Length: 130
Ligand SMILES: [Zn+2]
Image 1 (tube, protein in one colour):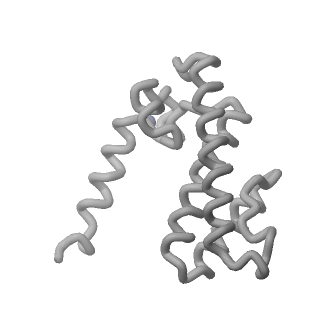
Image 2 (tube, rainbow, N blue to C red):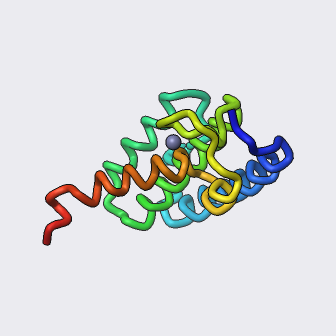
């Protein structure tokens, strides 16, 4: 369960929907409008949509568009979690993510402790040893 109220979630939802819409607009402008209008349809009605966008990121060699799409996926995933009623719940430990954290990072999937743990794990990988 989460300690974030429905009103707080509604506010964040509105914010994220707006950001997602802007992102989609910007990205559409950056891309060739002639090519594929449905290219960045991240609205999706299920898992397949997310995968299609992920494929697009691999395919595109435009870093800016790639970043925008990654952000769009994050926003879309967060909105999906709101819809499923699991927004604000850590995907690793199932504890609630604090409102402080979720308002700073509305797309956060993990509580602060799990996020730190994860960052530590990645930081200790040999590739960071330059
Ligand atoms: Zn956690």
